[in-house]
Image (cartoon, rainbow, N blue to C red):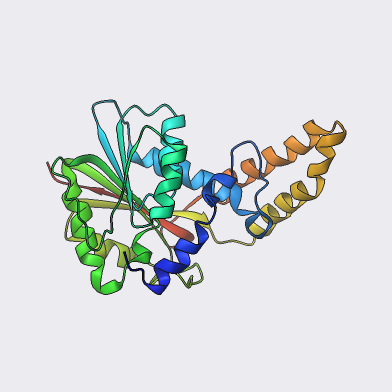
Length: 261
């Protein structure tokens, strides 16, 4: 499969399964993205909450699954639904299969899908994917995602807000209005939420995570409780002060789209 320059930039990041370098037991991440650990994990948790109750009779598609971290979180949280993941990156899908060996992953391009999924899904989720789609192809991708949702089902989409600086591997970022406009044709109702409030309080989170990184070696000399307390403080601070916000106050948008029965 030939990749665009933007897709190639994303592909280069999958030299390692970088989404798995973050875990709930530690704020510590690779240094250039140190403060992003609690942000990313709470983002996944918020997305999972918005998927709604999932039981073993349901089917869930992660469209643009990357290395499968969202599906990994679903599985470790006890989700019994049938999970399916697709992504254009062969390298990412290889990692997803390693971390989720019992899940059906396949390589497919949302702009030129090979698999039309004869049996639709109760829930389709697409995390940080639409910004990777050329604007001229955006509507056809949304139409494809909508076609994967069974009547009465839902699509949960997340994208970066225009508040966030443009990433070189992205074609566009969204406002609440532009995201709603992209989705409105295919769904009966759409709810849009903001995530990660832009505020001066963010500097406190960065300070706490930097402190954690600095004192982490003290775990080796019997000071685990103090170090872990700093980690918990970072998660708690983010959850209380930065996580949820109005649609145009944050750095990300989460849209919950309901398809008519």
